[in-house]
Image 1: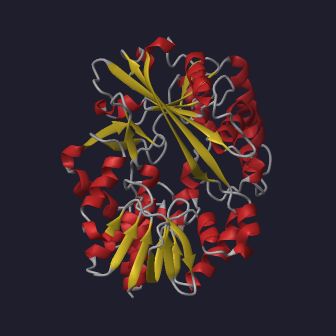
Image 2 (image 1 turned 90 degrees about the vertical axis):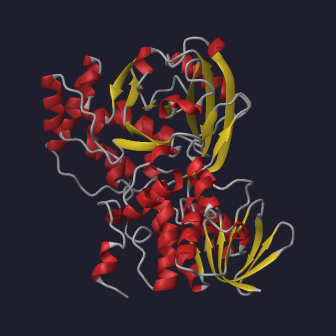
Length: 472
């Protein structure tokens, strides 16, 4: 039997595609997932002591009305907690509000002067088009901010030198600096906290981020979702996917959310291996959970997440995960939790055998915790594919690899299927699945996968405004 549609991966993208096929009344499709639970990188786990953990500090905000409606359907109006973002940078033994560049008034005088001098310098100099992300940092923030925060932090989070990254992805992801605003904040003694698309966000009341995607999966016909089913080979000519148990699924069209480098390997397209090696860079994410007794100190009581650019700790970001939902810990009256993220790449290797101890010592060094004896549970997870790095040759690689697969009716979407960090949040990923189905079934153009700037420019109605302007 040959299926009209086969979907690989039950993360947000695969689930979005499956949901839309079901809504459109397409009868014959199958969704295969290698893991025992749906969710992909948005799955959640409960450790042996009853603490809930995500694969990193996910927050949910949206650019799409369709996504908002789906989230309401999955968990209901009472299934969400709503938060005002409090994100901070721990630097020079103090907290500075995010975005850092708007709040440098909190820095020690020497660093403040260095940052201000750099900002003045770039206002007096022409700004040539940057050739890479490193040049973009220097041209946008000046040498002072680059040295104090932007360069050390971005190496810590990306695990690649910024000179090896492009600047195309930046968009709404990084706040640029307005010198007048910085000076006004300095003179008035004002904190500037409101920037960004996620200045408010929602989080599931129960079950972590994974609760969303488990609820989505439960709404699909049970026989159409196969868990614990890993695809080990894809034959492009025969249009067949073979699993580890030898089962074969024929398809007319394949929607895959596997990492694009893995798709190349599974299909035997070795001609793309050098291009993928050069253009499809990525970092590994090491996630650590610290379940703690007691309560956080007052300075952490309302914070959401914190950035750490300095070398007194291995992590680049820590989330006060018990602040996202009191149900992320066994008993909020007695427990709280921290979740730390450590990046890894060939340019930034780590010792995984000692990393948990380094995280604990880093939490002590940065005063996140006062005593290691308060830790009553630890949890760890290694996401081999953590972040799709926007490398210098990424777009060149994608321009050759993606059309090749589409000529074989293989559509690669999602965080690592499309390999575009700028459209890899949960809302983007889910909608990539929805949109590729709309393209294949109804002939409507994809937006998120093809035009990241437009996707991130506004809240999009459903149906999309571009579809209404040019109906198929």
